[in-house]
Each structure stands twice: as C-alpha cells, then as structure tokens.
View 1 (cartoon, each protein chain N blue to C red):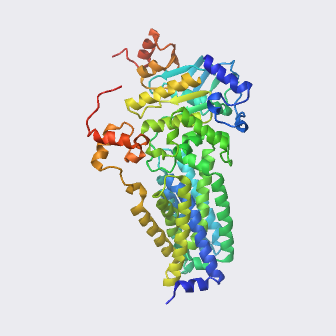
View 2 (cartoon, rainbow over the protein chains, first blue to last red):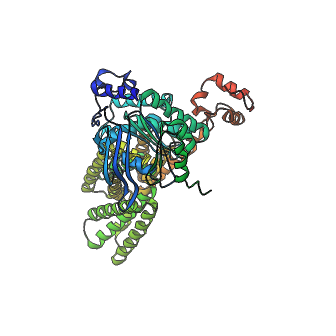
View 3 (cartoon, rainbow over the protein chains, first blue to last red):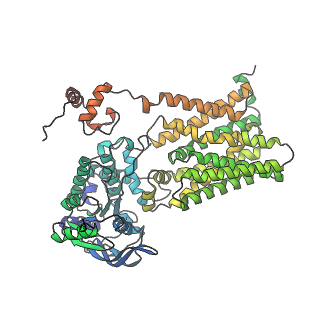
Length: 281
Length: 327
C-alpha cells in the first residue's frame, strides 16, 4: 500500500515514469504518457457506488458498493455467470455501468481510464508458426498510447523492454511467440498489459489453460509485480484455494458481492459454499 | 521461335509495358494484402469477391457500359455484406458468409451471361484475364487504386495485425475494430477489381493466397513475410509474363503456375519443417522429458535454457532417468 502510494506520487509530482520503468531511459523519455489518465494517489484506485452492471435487459451484478485501495491484491471468485468477467469489463469500460458511479483514482470511469489499466485475458492458443515475435506482441499493449497512423517511438520500445524485464522474459524478445510454452505465452500477455505502465492490473483467469507448475509460476510472477511494483491487482480465478493463498482480499460474486474481506475470514467459506451451492451436497 | 530477347525487344511497345507493369503491381499488392488475409483465415474471401466482381462485369457487358464501375460496386458491396454478416452473426464462420455470396454472385453472373444473347469475348477476358488488353485508362486506374490501398495498408498495418492476433484486446485498446474490418475487406475488393483485367476472376484468388502462403514457409517475422510475399507476387508476375510471351500462353495461367511453383519450392525447403536437430530424435525425446522448459517445444533449439552445451550434455547424459533430488 505504502509502496504503491509512493510510486504513484513519484509519477505525478515529478511528471516521470515510475522509477522501476525508467532506470535506463534518457531524459527525453522522462515525460508523462500521451493521453495519460490523471492519477490522484490520495484517492482509492477503484470506487463503486450503487453501481449496476450488465447488458440492457440483463442485470449481471447489482448495487455494487466497494472501494479498492491503491496497491491492494484482490481475488475474485464465483460460479460461472456470477459476473466476474463483467466486473472486469466494466473497469475496462467495455461494459459501462448501467447505473451508479464508478471512479478510478477519483475520476469518473471513461475510455481514457484504460490508459492506466492493464488487462490480461484468458489465453487462446497461438498458432506455432504465427509470424510475430515476443517483443512485437508486447508492443501491441502500447498501441492505445501510440495511436492510429503513428509509428512506435524509441520510448515505446524501451517500455516493451522494461515490461519484458518485469516478467523475466527479456531474453525471449526476438523469439516467435508461438514457440513459447503456455506459461511463457501467458507471461508475455502479462508483459503486454504492463507495457502501457498501468497502475491497475486486471487478470481474467490467466492460468485457465496451464498445468500446475506453470500456474504456480504465473502466480509467483503476479505476487512479485504486486510486492515489488505496488500494482493494484484484481484477479478472477476459478481455483478458490489457490487465489486465497495469494490475494490480500477476496470477493465472492453471485449476482452481487456475497463476500468482501480477508481470504482467511471464516465467513468466506460460508459465502463460497452458498455461491457454489455446496450446502446441498 | 520466340525467345526472351524478343520479349525485351517488344517492351518498346506501350501495350506490353502496360501489361508487364500491371501484372507486377497486381502481384505485389495482392502479395501484401494476401499476408493478412491468410493470417486472418479468410483465404476464401478473395474467391468470393472475385466471383462477385465477375457478376458485376457480366452486368456491365449486358448493359453495354464501362465494366469498371459495376465490377467495383459488386466487389465492394459483397465485401461489405460479408463483413456485416460476420459482425452480426458470430456463430457462423467467415466462410459461411463468403459461401453464400459466392454462390449468389455466380448465379447472377450466369444469369447476366444468359441474358446476353450475343457471344462476347470480354466475358472470357473477365474470367481468365488478358493483361495485353489493358488500356491506358485501366492502367492509370490500377496505379491510383494500388497506391491508395498500399498507403492505407501501411498506415494501418500495426492495427490490422493486432486485430488478427487478438481482436478482443484490440477493441479494448481503443482500436475501431469494426471500422478497420470493413476497411480491410473494402481494400480486398478494390484489389480484386483492379486485378480482374490482368489475371481474371478465377486466378486472382491464387495471387492473393499463394505468394503469402509461400512467404509463410520462410519466416516468423511479419515484415519479412510481407516483403517475401510481395517479392514472390512480383517475380511470378514478371516471369509469368515472359513465359506467356515466349510460348504464347494465357498470361493469368502462366503467372499462377509460376507462383504455385514458388510455393512448391518454399513448402519443400521450408526451414520451419527442416530445421536440423542438435541431437538425435531419441536423445531429443529424453531431453524434452527432462527439461521442464522444453516440454512444449518441438525443437530443442527453441529452448533458451538449452543453448549452453553443458546443460545439453547433462540432459542427454541423464539417459531418461528422472531426477528426484529437488532443491
């Protein structure tokens, strides 16, 4: 929490990239990102008040009231259709709230909020021969900043390099992405989300297609990003036990937030049992 | 007998210059656009649009008007309808909409040809192409449309590639995915329209797909693939024209034969299938069993942790025994 606050403060008060991204950057690149969403570190990272989420005619999550402090690591669990992905889509402004207010660092959620929110989707298989190398795939994470008709600058390539360093995959930069293992490809997708230098990282079942070893490796990486760089993290995951071990705060969703608190809280078990209909068995 | 020297001698004539440069431009532009078409898995789209362009041409011949505008209109309309169906009906595959439009346009083409009671050689040239019949006006149109398509293509290259690689993330990044998808199919229609005169409705499909498919065999880098595909398209047009001249054969056919030959060579000698392994297949099996980084890789060379000789030897010397000494 403190770590993240100081990071955000540095970014604002000195108008530079956070230090972890800029140790190799020249002064010409130490400037605030174009279209950067203004961050006020005194405000919570995310704030939902009386927000309804869903599609016209189909309410998925209703009356959401919660605050996510800067630097928190939140695990989100719930059965299929409980609204986990819809919650992330709302934060990405792909699914704007039907009613109520959603604030990101004190500012109303809008399309520009995406500039400070990194998103890691569920992994789809990448064809082995797809003509794209790792660094090109990560660079795609900066296309929102680069803009239409513009070419990537030196600064963009530096950000790509730093994102790859953050996920310990910089040695793979020139490899075809289809040649990497599933776990490595997922780390590249995390690097793609980090390439825009986000303050909030959303992960939607990032290990759904991975075996246990690779899942553990991805979780360790997310833990490191949280601890070392103070990122605010919201991760949707199906493995309730695993996510509880790693996150600092747990949401159990079931049409609304059935539980919001410490993963060690005994009430979490009850909420999970109710959400997953385990009491009947 | 006509020789290659006769071909270059005859290049002093404007009709042959137009034919040569038109086919080379068509080969280059089709080759570039074709890369994104095959990566997007829309190979059949070129055939669908080409046949609807043929229907447009047949209508123009029936009405006795300049076929350029009807060909262009039919091509663009088909591209937009296919794009719309794909956008609205996510359950059907790209090819479903193309298949529907393909058969509809062929039905229309046959209808227009049937209504035209007089035999017209223009219909045959639309189907099979004849680069030697390209007029100065057609050549200028080809230049203008090719230049426009190439400028748009290179300006939007990175966004188009992002959409192909991960459409949902492209949308989240703020890219107008629907608009660019429409623009892309519109560009394909424009390219098919200008290619029709040179190589014909049936063979334009080959010029879109084959150079890109050949380039795909050689590289893992998108820029190299674009370069190779344009090169293959341009070279096959050049040599196809020469063959056509020397042996007095239809131009479209010789060009497609050339590009298919290039594909055959690329397929046989593709480094993607012929990379020599560092160690024997038996040792590789042992290695991939033991090295946790190699498990999902088909070639050991792909594993960054196995580049060091020591590591290699250690893995090979383990002889397949499982090491239970965990740290």
